[in-house]
Image (cartoon, rainbow, N blue to C red; front, side, top):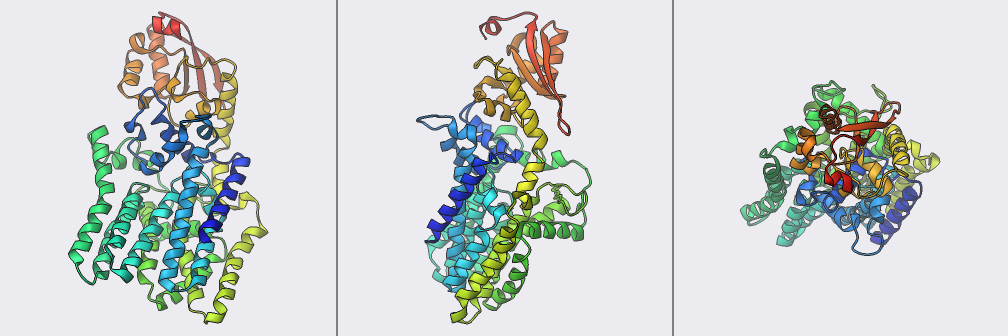
Length: 507
């Protein structure tokens, strides 16, 4: 029944967000979707197109949907559903594991239902489980790890150890806070084991560590630097640089900003219910579940302080939106703690108390149902206004002019939304992700640059290729400059002169 209710809720949410065209408001959602697509649709398709910064599991799970083997093979990529489907399925797994874990922890059906509802009925959760983001999958992994660890506490079974190891490994291939969980889970399982402690620890560690070891090897294979994801040119640290932000090297401010993000994501009532429920949960000796579910929040506070990961909120300076969704990392903690309050009530009152807690949390959202009141949705809208506008203008210009198969020298990032919007296969685009061939085209355009179109942001590698080609007598005329407030200038060039190769003439 719980799984069925979650499925209906997930499907309804995806339908609403799809109908309103909101699936790809987040720039990261567009990027995740297109990373999966370029693994099967690129001039150089294949395994290495997954990249070296974002962990691979979410993109692998989109692969069956970004190009279907039947019917309209590109339909789910074009409309974004190829990323929404895996996220929605992960939401079902997360909610089911939360119900099972809460039922085992509190031995109370009403408490388990309350925990699941407090988590699943949050509109910020429903938005992120409807779009190609990684949070939904991480919740599934985290709550799977919670379930299997508490199951092991009760059963001492090897199946629970294997399940915990697989869930932890999946978490490490989804988000980096999954790496942070491993030593704590290993210590807990070792302490909880009543026999064969060393074997339990070794089996869990072996399974869980496969994820980080694979990713270190993957980065070494592609870049010769196993830590390229952390210190490479596309890493979060390289992007943020030395720019100051609230919470950097300030533990108190980092905690304050993260706590505020969590409050905005959770709503006005849940934190207070969870605070009282945490006391009740500790009374029920639910120490490990609270510790495990608090760890992602600890990771983000640490990241704000030491790792160049800012969170900007509309209620705090600089009064903007950035990474507000990180506050949702502690929502499973708040939901489980709230269920603890139900579990200590007298049995005849538990059902009524569970319903009261759910209504207290949901009614404020229902009283203000506009999506602008959901901090994650509003962040995606505000930060995408300029990007959506220049994407539209660029697509409108190209639609009557570009001949499919001609070829475009461009960048991968945000510009890829233009080609998805137009239904242009990514194999038509020539980007830095195509490796040495792209480097050759930029360095020696007289030999290797054949594309009749160049679409670039100012200062990008494609712009460098145009400038270098001009010095060699290869003329790319600027056909259109698209200028949108608070956005980079988009420049569209078309090849109009200079030595044309046979390949250029064919195109």
